[in-house]
Image 1 (tube, helix red, strand yellow):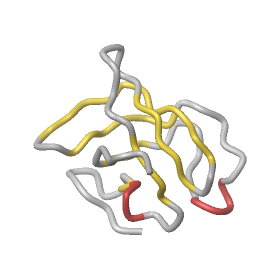
Image 2: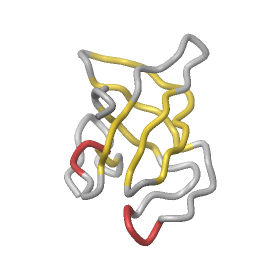
Image 3: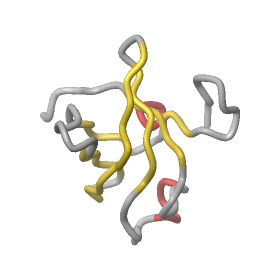
Length: 82
């Protein structure tokens, strides 16, 4: 997986196989994303130049498919839900 931003351990969601969509964060700092047919929340979202960063805020069931875990720091670009 390719990393973007300042943190080399950060996962860029849009480049993970199985990425489906990422919503624009709501004012409370949460965004919803979908990978491998699993939708989950990203908390503490902050934006810089169109790139959002935050922390996975759910226990995930498809970790084997996408490699993410609760508490991972991730980045993403908002996309349209298709």
